[in-house]
Image (cartoon, rainbow, N blue to C red; front, side, top):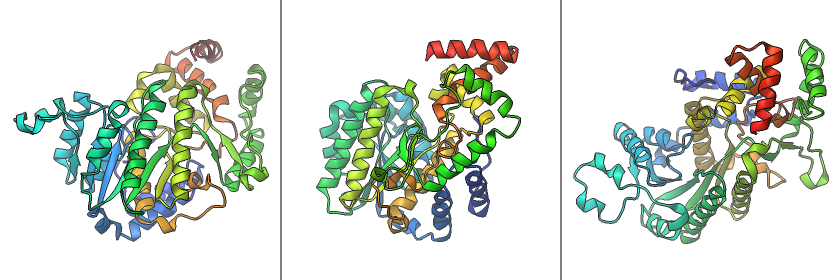
Length: 403
């Protein structure tokens, strides 16, 4: 399903999908390497046979952008681990019943003997990774021990619980790697686009070129006043990372959104650290940057929803979550089944440069956090039909106070 809106778009595959990816890359929404990965999966379908020998473990199986549904639709064996929320498990179980794949999940002790119907299992399903990580690890070791395991770390929690659940997932993934022969366990992440990354040199060059040309059109009529009004906070050039020797010639892009807080940034650092270390130890690692998406949790927050809706007016695209999930699942399959196709890099952060779907943030002329507040203010003014000048100013003041 291909869409940049809240509503899902038409399903695409084959050459039609490749054409849309080429258009998206031309707009700077993703790196060209994404097209290469999808094209290889399209034209070399040897990976389908390998699926039968693979067990996918989704820590945070209920994640809105996680790969569980897409993997089940391909007939994969998927182990989903998530908290005990009946509505979440009811959705996953009902989805699995309609698809050719196999869903395995933990239930409370004694459930198998007492459950009368499979539909009732959602009441007993789930576990707590923060408090039960050792038990989950021991259980996972018994699930299809003859298969290659791909352990995906997708769980999210608010506040300080995010680093906690990240550490729990990390312990489970590391335990699985240590318990099997080398090459029998791979790990996977979906990296947030609102983070700091080393990026390809051509991405920075395009960002600088777009910044230079932005001032030549009609947009300059309001870009300059916005920069002046923001006292250096708005419309800041996206060139914070220089080509220092430490980065071996790779620019650095700063897409952090401060409102996400230190716990979020710390949890993501932990994930990046494990990904880099695991790859250095010879583990196959999939760690692609996933795009910002119109998930249910985002749409519930009116300010964040306004920022996302207004982003398109500034050349950024927010993906439909089904589009994001399907695309990231495709990149995961490519990384796991064609690891030799991923180019090597002279820097550890090269792991995150290939296959990045950043929604335009790496190649955008302005630093993302210097634009997102203006985007939200303009969208709120339009939503509430306020005069643009007064409405945008009032909305921006309210937004800055709330954030």
